[in-house]
Amino acid sequence: MIRTTLLAATALMLAACNADIEESSSQAGLDIPDVASGDISEETMKSVTERLSSDEFEGRMPGTKGEELTVALLTERFEAAGLEPGNNGSWTQRVPLVEITGKNFAPLTISGGDEDLSFDYASEWVGVTYREDAKTSLDDSELVFVGYGINAPERGWNDYEGIDMAGKTAVILVNDADFGTESLEGPFNGKAMTYYGRWTYKYEEAAAQGAAGALIIHDTEPASYGWNVVESSWSGPQAYAQRGENAPPLTQVNGWVQNEVGRRILEAAGKDADKLMADAKKKGFKPVPLGLTASTSFANDIRKFESQNVIGVLRGSEAPEEYVLHTAHWDHLGRCTPAPDSDDICNGAVDNATGTAALVALAEAHAEAGPTRRSQVFLAVTAEESGLLGADYYAANPVFPLDKTVGGINMDAFLIAGPSKDVTVVGPGKSQLDQFLKAALEADGRVSTPNPNPEAGYYYRSDHFAFAKRGVPMLYVDGGEDLVEGGTEAGAKVAQDYRDNRYHGPKDEYDPNWDWSGVMADLQLFYRLGRMLGMSTSWPNWNEGDEFKATRDETCSGEGAACGAAATAG
Image (cartoon, rainbow, N blue to C red):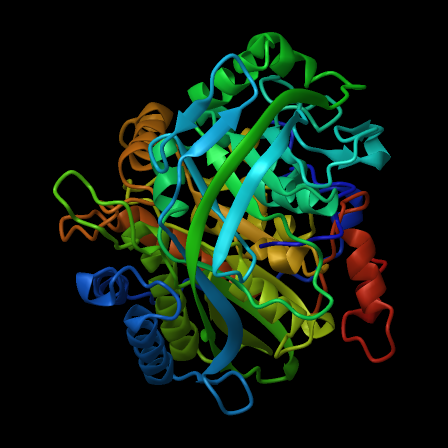
């Protein structure tokens, strides 16, 4: 999964509640060209989305027939659009992965209380191993409640202080200690989730502490999704990056338990669950041994394989060795927990056949308009659903050097909601790219609003994060919720309906009756952004004080770095 050294500061730096992104003194003087609108094909959006999300593609799980069909379709469409192969004559970059499929799951048994507790796999708990072992066993592992499972020395916070976790299993709360606050003030930036709140971090830290297992107590509101999403996403084949010889340590089992299950475990230890969870929000919280043990086991089928990122490039006319990046993930979950009608293909029409189709449609539009002075790169990455693995692999092994990558735009799941007056900016106020976004919005007569759900931590849940943590300025913009018909109430209803009924489930399917007008307006915005960055001579940086600025400055300080002259401009 994602491993980052940028744990010291991971706040979503939201703009102060006004709809427009204001210009600061550090953002003056950027070269932001005026650009014309583009000819973006709605038919391309429809046909590519429908094809990618058809049952024939089997949910686009990496390493399956679905991947073969997806890669073939994207290379065909990129070539037809007028792009060149992006990887030294090849359309693809190989990404080494391992698929681990758990089976024959024993119940999760909790012992040591007045009576043993037994919880059924899928309905009450789920678990996986990241280890490439044919058999996984957790045998009488001592349970320790570690609050939110955070070790943040720069914030004076350590939920593991004073305990040796070797052989033990951490019981962890979802999100971070500021969840539930209404402001952006607090040890973990208030309402806005930090990376410390993400499950990826919690498993990484538990492993770094030497734990044998890690169990996150699910809760719908702080997780921002229901148990159905956990059950569907964490069952069946799971893809991970292949591990090298010097890879960091791993737990034996990483899993989730239903909220009620977590409470029963705490109460079986003689604890007041509400008080313990409230105590975990307070600075100075110490880990609490529960006097209970956990046991379970399951077998694993292991398959090593190579997946593929798909890369096309439209070479620049004057500065072809400077690059503007467009990203979207092509993968989804494959076959998953069946719906009541026995449909077990997670088609991923919205997430993220729409974003992948957008890469094709934007490539066509840019090629038709002619090259910009800088090169435009269209990168369809694999294994996002497994932890941003394809994006992370590219960012660690870039085809186009990161110090020559001006910045980028990420596209992940276009909700079909009709036209909106706004767009939602995830993580506004972070970089000088905001000024390009402001100009593009003004040209289209639209406004921006901050993410209405900063507690969900969306900035750390899509492919742009793999580049941002390595210093490349990245924009992540979603469709707006202030709909032309129905306003914010209607927009929020559409988003909630998708999360509750289709997200990561078999019913995220293509509908020929969709109204694409809102998506096409958003694509026009992304087109303008790409053209502006492609025609500009500026190198936008992160804003002063942003967690990623120091990394960008260091990257750009190297001899021959294209971004070097602008490294200190922000």
